[in-house]
Image (cartoon, rainbow, N blue to C red; front, side, top):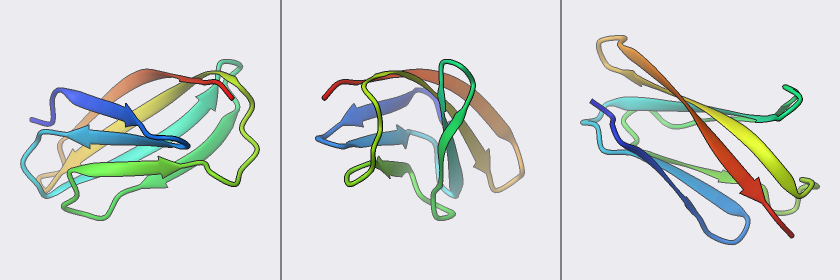
Length: 88
């Protein structure tokens, strides 16, 4: 199943990827450490990765939490929490 989930940073983008067999839907919610929702991103059905692009946006340097949910075609869901560090 979509494990391990990995992330890659490229400039002002985080790429979340899963090694699971599509069709998989990735749903990512980014939160501050205070629990405030910063952004939400949802992949196309059948995607094995999702790019969160925050270029052109005001995102403060600091630590964030990404709640990553993967849903397969049978409706099975897994949730992981990842730490993100953004420094300008």
